[in-house]
Image 1 (cartoon, helix red, strand yellow):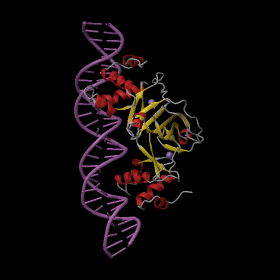
Image 2 (cartoon, chains in turn orange, cyan, blue, red):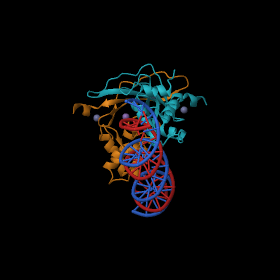
Image 3 (tube, helix red, strand yellow):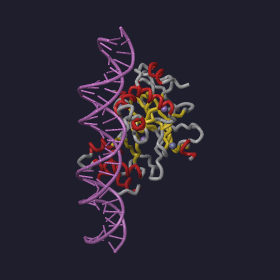
Image 4 (cartoon, chains in turn brown, red, green, purple):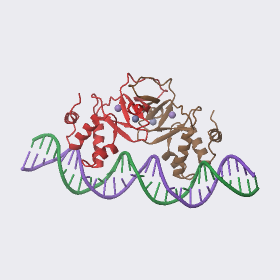
Length: 140
Length: 140
DNA sequence: ATGCAAAATGTTACTTAGTTGCATTTAATT
DNA sequence: AATTAAATGCAACTAAGTAACATTTTGCAT
Ligand SMILES: [Mn+2]
Ligand SMILES: [Mn+2]
Ligand SMILES: [Zn+2]
Ligand SMILES: [Zn+2]
């Protein structure tokens, strides 16, 4: 199912370093998107905070992860679809922001809506997001 | 068409102050959403930067304006639908983020999509946004 | 294996949006 | 005109994110 961090790095033309592998592993096992501050806290022994920023930048640029801006304006990151690469991100799913725990979840939805816009607007991509209570928060 | 800033303030239960009226006027005439830094630059003689933050907070809380988080994580504000108030925001339109100029536009679309989510997720509101080139940027 | 160049990292300093506390002023009501 | 809650100004602070630059490491060629 999940490719090894090592395989992910080499298939996206990225050098293999300790913190990159750890961040890929961590995001792969997470149920929700994670921010730099989240990762900084977990990996403060393994890497400098600036390195974590740069790691996230590189991984996003190469199509390994995608960024979601949460309701407070902070960037959170999640693993991409397999088909993403440096040319094109294909993460056209819904992002669910839990108002209770603050987590952001990537959820697959049947299809993104199409619609028409006023003359002159050229659409490059569409985003659908929702706010509410996540599954974990609504049961407890 | 547009209500006077004075009327807007009194109908939403807000005291009439100079900077509030100026900010309402300014947002009413703007084609796109504006951030605190935008407004701070325009009104640096008229009010302290913190006052502008607090003005935006109050106006949003009472349903006069709504907040959109742009692609850089910064909050931008636009005038609400007439039906918005402190109980409920009804700004369920599309937000278009121009990748060229950075402006965010509020655009009316026929209807927001409906979709189904995994068990347990409780939706409170849905947001649709798009990225691309705005009308002004695509003609020039 | 060794050497090399480009890429990645650590460290420090910095920028910018946004918040907090507190003293002072002002708007609305009486 | 007096009163008081709300709004403002000012200073200090927090937190996410960026930039510069010296040092180390990776991947590759020899
Ligand atoms: Mn996602
Ligand atoms: Mn809007
Ligand atoms: Zn939750
Ligand atoms: Zn534009």
